[in-house]
Image: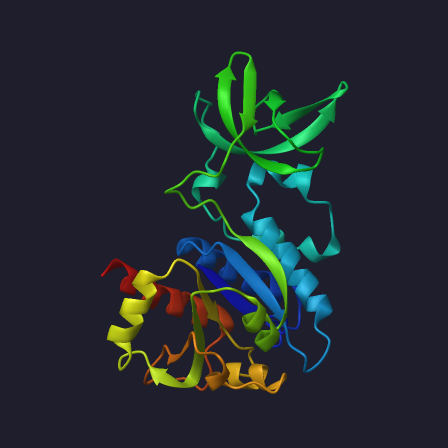
Length: 271
């Protein structure tokens, strides 16, 4: 499952601290419901490249295991307030409680004494077998604890192992080029989820590649598509849904929309 959010996500936030807090809420929502990719698409109404960079750095920081942050993430003014970020507590963020053979961990590759070794959050560096360059983040399996030896591994199946952050063009261009089996466009102008429940249930349960798209604080999905002359009907694989029938507020914040929408879809998937 992926989500697509605009680079204008911080239109309501004026300070870096407020932007950090909002990005933290988005990171938590994504992690709670197992989002694997967060696409940040371009809002062509103006240049939001600066806010994109802030969002990308904070979201990537939040997803990186704590024991690897100092190694993998350079100091940057955009990260001044990352201390207020709520921990994700996902499986790949597990606190270090000793290592056991067969365990999977995230590791950072380091060049030391003429060879590449791995930092897995232990007191000692591990001998590493596999591909990669210094500075890379890799998933490893613990082959031995005495001495500490690890090898490159695939991410585990059946466990949530974090999200990636990717840049995307404008929404219409992104959707035309992507290969999702199902796209959900969330908008107040869409069909009520209560009226489309059976159809949505059937589609959500049968697809493997799903993307949920959100608008900005000031422009809905329809306005984002219109930047490229597109409209809802141009996307045959899309469900256009109002996920909040009878909402009692004028607007729903992006982080609230993500959490609420993913909660509803999670219920659908488990029925």
